[in-house]
Image (cartoon, rainbow, N blue to C red):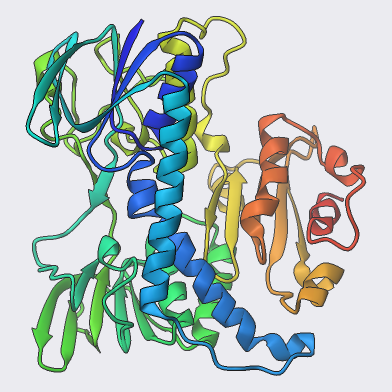
Length: 452
């Protein structure tokens, strides 16, 4: 089986690794680094910077732990080096993994020439035609830049200009209150910037549980963040003093810098998809079925290109499922991806994580549910750590006690949500969590209490 993958991000790397283990002859074409944008520009760099910001915030709470506080400030050069070292280490580990499995990695760009031919253009301009029995396109996405925003990488920033920025903004205006936007708010507020957030709707994180969003808003306001709700940015002006963000309700928000975090655009252009008859929708995405197969049976799409959940974890699992299907393993012990059971996290402070059915979604559907909630304020470990903010909420079926979903706001939420994610995926009952003998003192005890 000759399997050619265009794009070496989470989907491409995992598809290549698993398919190679199953005996495929695999070629990966990647123009930047293995690990893709997740490692180079997005997930890893942003979380590395957030970790630095969290350390600063923790130092500000040191008095709660019986320590004297000392002011801490970010060192941009040291931060830039730290981010690059992490990225290089991860890329090297992927290189070594695929190399050990016999995967051919081509540095360059790929383009489909016909249904079974892929043209690889190497960085030196050399062209190589590769015959493929199966093709996966997993080229990710890029930040969406509207026509009214003239990004210069200096005062007007796209997300990828901020890992790290050339300077710490005195007053940053963040446009976009989704996951990426609120993470930038937290990050730069931790670094000492004054931050204003343009919220086009009436709550931050419009796709999340209102109670979760309210908890984050309260923390933002307490830390001095200015929220401009119901305001949609329509323009950015530069002057000698900084930037002016113009909103459709005539409000003008002044700052030293502006940062755009308003979604992404799939990298589906110049892939030659039309040469193989692959359908691309009006958003630039390649619609796929539950096997990640496009309208052409042997051509697959995964990651942001597939239009499913834009999460690195989802892309990685899609890659694995594609490899199974390519190698004919989908007929036995194969479970389709259930995107509604994907756990997600937002690395603000406090952290936010959720999985499965949300309370507001259940009410909108008229579905009967049981909701139990426990605050971290009563958790011994949270008190020991000096950060009792947030709560655990578990959603279950009142008739069967099966866990349907949950939300966590608080320290280490991204790790704790894994317990609820396993329960949702395995259709465990709340009693399965309650009767687990957990560590004491631990934040996870709040999970068992919420399942009572």
